[in-house]
Image (cartoon, rainbow, N blue to C red; front, side):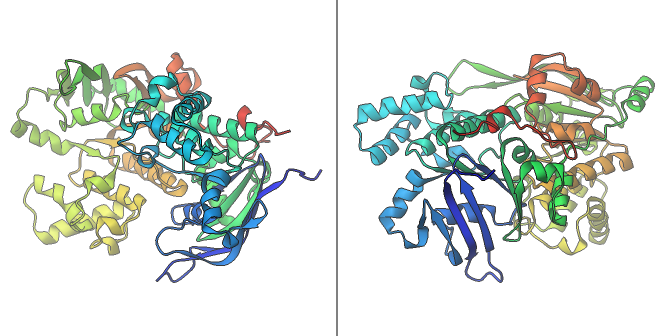
Length: 553
């Protein structure tokens, strides 16, 4: 049966070039988008996904230009549009929702006024009417207490709330096409789910076409009608999602991405961990730990870590999971004394570390290391890889420069970084290489315990799988104990013996990993698990999430 829905967008043999680049950023890309259809465009960093989204609205970054092909929106070529028609196109015809909503909003203007300003520009209505319409839009996108939220500044909103404001702004001019360029990147799984449900629901209700640019195949599997795989500026495969999953991709690269993204639970051996637990005392024992932040100019306090108790034995890994703001990273920083704890006890190898002076703590610091969530921020931009990895070696016995270099090369080999990167600077490294350098730094002093803070956040599909495999291999080789801080539950089963679920500074549930996944006892844990977007490869995929399969009349 043929699809009779009108075609909203046609991309025909599109090529995009940039000055000085040896090859085009996009090359002969072709696809069409119908009303009510959602297409997922997937690819790794540098594949050309964001360039494609911006080419559609003729807003290429820098001095980029369309060097071949054409883009047709509602039957008209974008290349033939006048500047006034292009301004109408951006918003009234095609709306772009980007990553990091707060960066897209004016930080010094209340969000309600920002929405009203756009409404007045597009619809020519008065100030009072524009505000009422803004509040109505806030209600439509699920913002609680919209009157009060309209008076908030962007920094006063959560990430999910700010993203809802951006979606409301995108819907103002009633566009026919939504371009969502990694619109949920960095959001918690539960917030991501809410934003995606909202966006897809509005698209289905209004008959919009959606291009969902992402590197998350789980998102595509659960929300999209078709999937397009991009590599090196080319759209190498375009297929219905169900056939892509049920029958398999045609291209080898697509199969690699799907394999890397698929849920492959290879659970840690909890029985062996339990046996070890009966034979050894905890390496790390945390009792009733409290960390309080006091708000400047106010008597109110935030209990970021509120009476937390947990223990980790030698060779064990505990995953600390929860949403942003739950206190996970604060907890990790307290353990290594990057933050001072307010009360409680942190016993490492039987010694309470809280009463120790900085000098007394220094030998323990070598045994407790942390891999930071944002390695680029933690890496000195003026230092080479050699100097970055060698820096912690200064905490130990004196070493010659030659011995330091030999140790650095050994560590680079361990984490899978080419020795040719020895003199590279952080900005010359990929995100995955930066993560690996952070791990090499932490391992340089041969620690007994390592805290991995969101080691897989915002990484490409294949890089994320590689980092998980690397961490698991290192644990097996070195017998490390580890605290694995994450909201990526798909990686937890491959890395952790035990799971602790954190919410509002408290541990609400903890236990063996497989028990937590199979039989969670707390509603909050069930909510976290339900927010994951698994990919069922090989099984008959007959239904996606309910909001993603409603058809438009």
